[in-house]
Image (cartoon, rainbow, N blue to C red; front, top):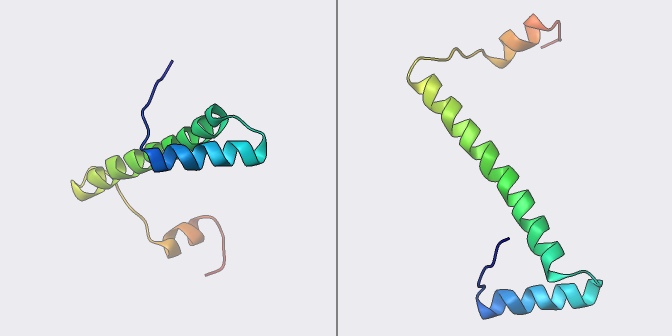
Length: 74
């Protein structure tokens, strides 16, 4: 269970959207959290991998190398 306080303007927008679409505020809050959470997870994973590359613990390849390895024209 999660309870959050929203600024009045954001709450009003959410109420308006729910009323206009026949959905609940909870539906849209859950949808927004799911989508944003996916983005945050991707960013975290990318940052972690970038740190490994910068520290020399992970190898990189150019696009040309990847294309050649998979038999794709460049």
